[in-house]
Amino acid sequence: MAALTFAPWIVSACDFMPVRIEGSIGKVGNVTIELGESIGKPTPTAWQGPMTISIAAAPACTVSDDVSIVEGPIALAGGILYVPTYSGSTSIVYAVEAKTCAVIWRSKDYEGAAAFKPGRLITGTKAIPVDRRCRPMSRSAM
Image (cartoon, rainbow, N blue to C red; front, side, top):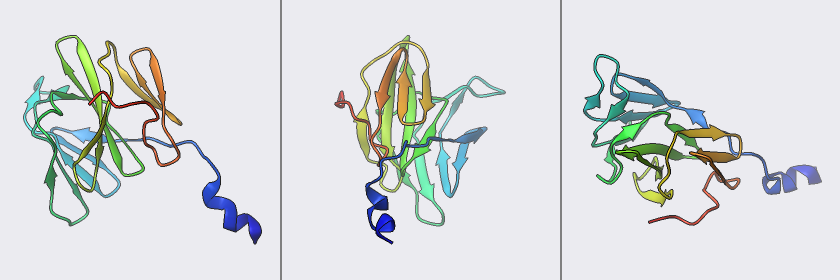
């Protein structure tokens, strides 16, 4: 019984769940993301926004215009959407609270692709660890 009392204190890797995107709509669990106008038709590879998020039947919220031009992959972890964006050859990942659409973190600029591994976010060649609540453990560039 004592082990159950301490279970919340056990640190485990944060698992990123990929957002499945069809057209301009992304879904993962009960979270739906509208990505806005697509770039790269007929198979979109990026979206201009504005990005809106809804959870189950709750009203949608709109994410800051700073979070554009969105590209994949997008992932959800611990109620936070990790959203890669780009402008020219520079990329930025934003961490957005799915319930409120609040941007809670911004990566430093990087070149290359974003990737999601257990317990860490990869931006280009840099690995950024995330805590057990799936929050980035590096300072935000905001």
